[in-house]
Image 1 (cartoon, rainbow, N blue to C red):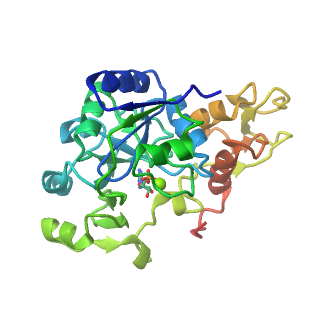
Image 2: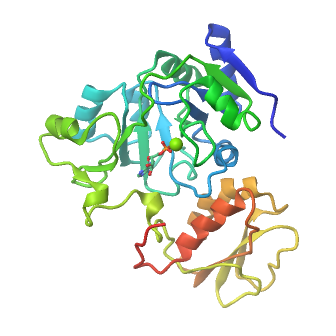
Length: 328
Ligand code: AMP
Ligand code: MG
């Protein structure tokens, strides 16, 4: 299924090949100053679904989009004064800003896990920035390891973990930091640390001259969104494993044997029962189905294998009672 793995030491030629692969929707692992990232075109539903397939992630948490500079990031995210101050001081560097997503941004709904916010970062690694410039599009890049494994700081680590699932590693030698980026949420008037990292809360507070709230220690602070059970539930109720229609329902259908008769409307996650196609379509179709003329969104059964695990995890959260905030 996957192409043979190419590991190329950094050169002009390797950079051009890696950029071409990213533009073609393929996965490329590349070095940053924190860890090796598993990159894909953040505007392509299918390419981003490939990240989740390769990592075998059991859930669709939102991914960080990487840019060569602040202005490229600002084409997709709305920067306020606080964001500009932090970008001025810490970029390029190990700081990720969660900001409101621009309405006209072509970022995939899968990259942002359907959220109205986007996480953006400019890495402090010359090869990474050269690649981002050459790819000329936002690159979604979580750490280049199988889910649950240690983050990779060398090309050999990436090859050992993902070698059979990706086509290319751009080898830039060992990463310097080895720690993942600090994630700060600036989507409200508070400053919330979603993930601690190399840049500390005190450093951020000093630049902004205000308190930084730690998401884990403050019950009022929104948790990192992937952790909330009812995170990004559609407005309509969601009914799982629907095999017979109920009144005024729209169906998200899956697979050749799916029964669609009797539903008010039908949107196909995948006609052939392809888990990757369904993952790529999931958030966009949930948005599309969420219309007040229906009473509920019914979801056809989706087998719990491959990307079906992450799809079912997300759908379970979408169907959870709206007051639920339990962690998983
Ligand atoms: P990773 O890609 O594995 O390095 O992790 C990305 C981190 O950024 C996770 O902690 C996410 O919860 C967080 N993140 C990414 N996008 C968003 C977003 N749109 N809103 C809030 N947090 C985000
Ligand atoms: Mg990771």
